[in-house]
Length: 64
Image (cartoon, rainbow, N blue to C red; front, top):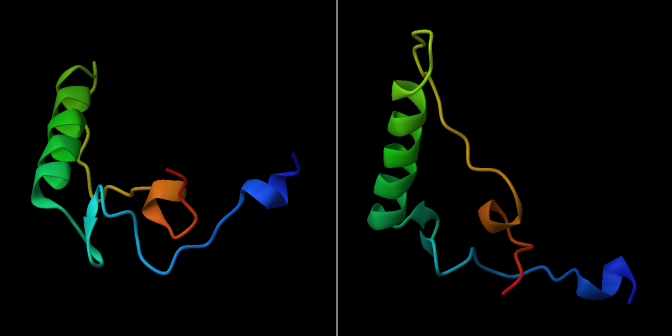
């Protein structure tokens, strides 16, 4: 199988995590929980200015 054969562009974001163009509230809350726990376990204090969701599930080329 070639990579291009497994690559599919969708017309909408993954319905499992997005409601239209917006993250589902429960997904957003889980992401924030993970970030909070990560920050709490650091040995230095940091100020988080932004959280970015990356990868195929954050774009239109996700796979089931």
